[in-house]
Amino acid sequence: MKTNIYFLMLLLSITGTVHAQQNKPAANEDRIFDLPANEINKRFFIALDKGDKMQIELVDMKDLARVGNIDSLLKIFLKDLTPLKDSLTDELSVKRIDYVMEPPAAKKIRIRQERPAGKSFLVQQQDVAALKLEQDTVHFIGVVPVPGTKTIHRYRISFFVNHLDDLTTYADGRLQARLVSLRENVYTNWVRGDNGMMHLKKDYNISSKSSAGSIYTHGDYLAFTPSVAIQNYKNYFVPSFSLGVTIITGTMGNRGKTREIGAYWEPDFFFGKDSEGRVKTYRNDFLTLVYGGGPGRKEVEKKEPYLQYVFSVSYLIHRSGDYFEKHTFRAGIGRMSLFEGKTKIEPVLYFHEFFKGVTPGIRLIQSF
Figure (tube, rainbow, N blue to C red):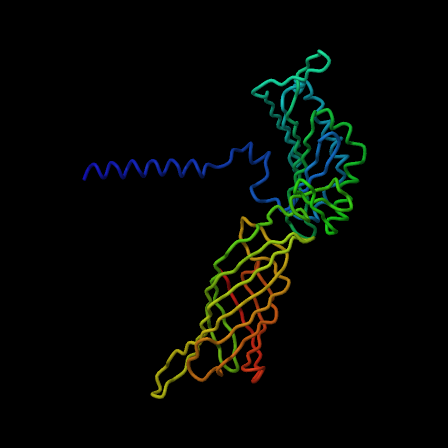
């Protein structure tokens, strides 16, 4: 008995240690110099000279117009970096600089450097020179206000350059020109390059892993979608619930579309009195098929897509009482989504045979 207790205490202590390690809060330094996980929704790459590139990360595409002139931001950064130049003289070290511009606090700079584990050399005409293979990285992190709200969005603009000094050559207007091109053409045609990246057709130097820059194109997945609903049918108030599966598919169209196809079992409940005057529940079961499409949502949240159009058709597979005619259908003709798609209002039409006895109704659906 004592052995079992000691073993249980040991197991709990190990589990508690692992749990504490997995849930260890982020250090203050990381909270200051990194963006919160999954905050960014858009990511673009802009090719510069000799393999250098700029990366743009945004919460919302509209934020790009609120960032300001990137060439001016780069000049301010280079000026702020001047007093720290002496700490960056090692040409072979790989450097990462994080530059935070979040009011009202002063700007913050973090510098990290490390030497590669091995040494590389370039041999050319009997001359041997040390070779640097990794790029230097600079991250700009800032915030922009969302007009009409008290909300702010963070953004990150990153540079990956062969040498830190190369940044001075880019503050000549070309960076801002690229951002303007991205903003004006983001929803035009994208083409897939040989490297698998999507490139803006009107400006091939701008690329992304998916068209329109979405970083949460989730691919296809299967979701289990229980819900409850209330609806009217003629002069009856009818509660129901549904159980089923939804296939969510991502596409690579110009705006990153998402489509859903679902199949559900839905019992509807009527309450009436039997021949002896006792209250009785009458259950009528529908089999429902749903199709919808719209812009995609974050994979990590697995939220339902913002569906622009939704159609459903239901067929009565189990009949109880005289509430529905045999071979009754119900057609859903669009849905209005509220609260990130969890609550929906759906106009419907009930009919039997070939549009006999058409009866309109409204359904209020709550998903979980």
